[in-house]
Image (cartoon, rainbow, N blue to C red; front, side, top):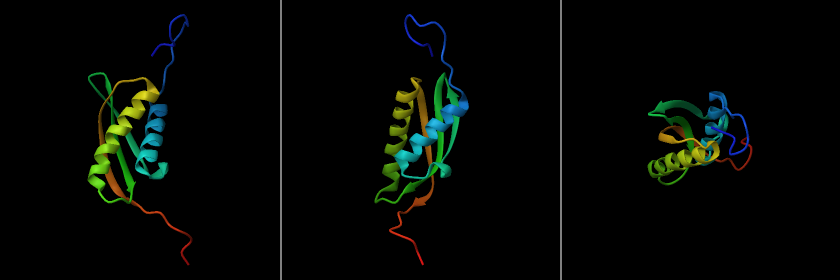
Length: 104
């Protein structure tokens, strides 16, 4: 990634930073706490690949929601990083339910 025309130098983003960014994007999109989201990075012919393991917020159609989330996560990570993002695999590991208050 280059800084742009007329600006010397390069900008390098570490794998750790990419993982943290992808985790935050996935957590926001799936409605899960970021600490419960795991993201693996890979390479597919020069494109960044994402393997996401996460719970999802409770909703009517979980399978369709996961399919849409994979595309949304891919597009958002690509927009934020300026990198080409290839296949994104989302594995649902549970359901996150909202609590109205403290249980006694």
